[in-house]
Image (cartoon, rainbow, N blue to C red; front, side):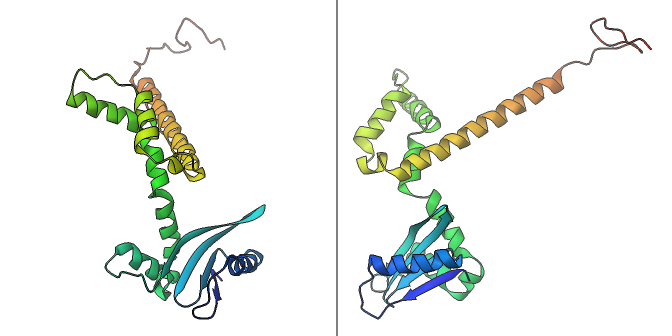
Length: 203
């Protein structure tokens, strides 16, 4: 079973105690996804059990406010229909939301590669402009990005993820350079029974 659906009476307000009950059932049954609904309003949560039970709301919608001309609204509905469940589209939707959100984008803008790119673009506008990455970071943090985004736990997580990826890329590039340099070294002629640098093998 992949989904646990907690259904309340039509028009009944969805409360935290309803969600808590559904999360409790799901964690004990090994279910990842919880759907809480009263027929009109829908909430979808991802349940994780790692030492302790946690949950995260992936999306919610009300049929009163759905706009079938919007792609994200259609994606939400399709992830819950029979074909969407069979294809595990809810997992793809969750991964997309984890990456494409204001917290991740904000963290990317504050990262070193993005700040360096902004510096290059500013220099291209005016060769005389000298601005440091630190100056740009302060400007982004205090004048452009919202405070609740900068200080949020989600942004801190995104920053750590981006930093890990950047370190991994730098390591991979260094290994590639080292391997290329080693491959380009000339082969030294070695006489039979000898190795380079005057070292001899004796039988």
